[in-house]
View 1 (cartoon, rainbow, N blue to C red):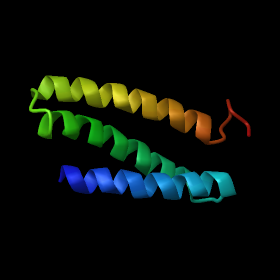
View 2 (view 1 turned 180 degrees about the horizontal axis):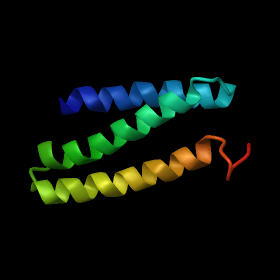
View 3 (view 1 turned 30 degrees about the vertical axis):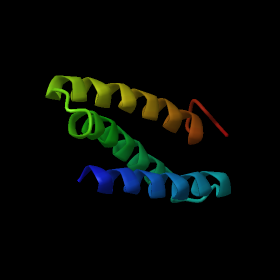
Length: 83
């Protein structure tokens, strides 16, 4: 499961970056899916590969989600970031 999620966020991330650069209508869904996958990856990797406890994996996922949310806010145009 962890490997599938890791490969998926890489592929979706590249497609999302291309979509943002080209300013397509499907950029927003791709970037949001990328943010969810990167958050899931951060939690799964610490738990699956690192062998840590579930609370540590959750903390890792929360912080990765916050960083992904910042990236989404900067990458996508919105009311606060009219690009």
